Image (tube, rainbow, N blue to C red; front, side, top):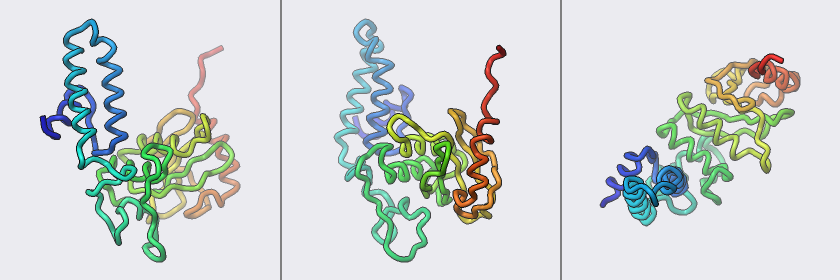
Length: 230
């Protein structure tokens, strides 16, 4: 079995690996194990499937071309020695940004930035992601993304900006380089949106518009689905 065949095995059983990221590989393996391992003892078909999956996992896990140094691979293109995904939101002057990934999961902001860049197909569109905790905006996260992955962008932002078990109430995005007035809502109270535009007067920093920030909770409340009749 070679690397390509191992990836095809994961795809055959429903886990399409988008990158060589070691965390994505393990998440995919866990997902498949939950489906096939439980029934493997009493079902030969599931036993053979799990054997295939485990063999492919072992090969990919040992592959030296996989993610190294906390998720950064030697294949990531670089600008001035820094991975290209780290330059989102950077002016290009002064000190270069950091591409260091301390923890290769959603707790690490640079892991999230790299993951969004991967999911977007290495997009060159720059976006600011704003999480809202119900009272105020949290510091923005600049990424290379695209509208087609708003749901993934929201999910990753909810993970990396949560405090303990508490996640932000809402996630917004704003495309860099465009006129600033509209902030796009992509997630609120467990619901995903394709980008509801909300007008504000904070320019590139919606948090500066205190009147807008004060109105946000009631705006979000109005988007909640009505409950069952009482």
